[in-house]
Length: 372
Image (tube, rainbow, N blue to C red; front, side, top):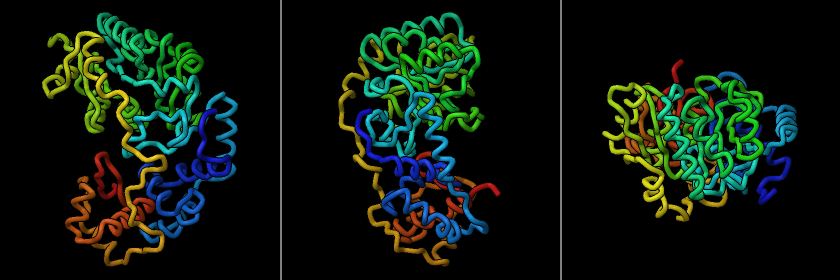
């Protein structure tokens, strides 16, 4: 089973906390750091949400439902792996929105390999699929785990070519939900010979909002992301943008300017992505990065060392932060600077407002008022 940091009760409470209303990965981490445990955070949620302005009781994850979810995960032959436990993808722990829990099924040892994402168009051309297969096979042979999203087209080609050597499919819904339907056999084979990765619990049918969250995991697991073919408005470009924001390498395969499926990759090249025509181009860029120290602690990443459970922001301080916020995302650092308040106070206020559903977090530590 490998190293486990949580006992059964703690794992249940972690699951309850992340399933509670308005608790995302960043909020989860702050709550754990502030109260020392998921159990303590669960006890504190009602008062925090009330102080943030929620006019009704906050919805907290049910203990009975968490037990049922854990039983269902075990029945699927999967495992709910916590941040910091063996099997949790090492590089993923570096991103600020790292999921506290991942549902994993298959050969978890594959996730310790250096990983490369290969993504692209669902309606990929024959040449695009051929190149994706060639690239995936050669990179897998060189010792890389090939990561993709199990979608049609380029994703499917990359998974199929690397199945024997090592592939990971990051799915948008639950690991038991087959999507798209025609990839049912590939889904089964990856769950047996590769590894399936999901942030959502089993039974979750993928919705539009799940795919950007899935894409951040694909980018976060990997040293670099390769875009083979992509339209200008595509999920592959979202994955590439997230990879760049996370400080990872972005590669793109050039294509014909007459083919709309190449417009996205060509745009990435104009914006500074590394042009590749072979697997060697990728390995040459990534090899020096492999084995570098992971820039996180062994526990949940403690960023707010001064934040203490005993401090309750005043109404005046809370009103000041709300006044400074608007519908346009603002950096947390700018919010701290413009408010003149100490960082722990601003962080505490934002936490309360988020639990009340009044503010929304964005990538790159940005915050805005929620749409009401």
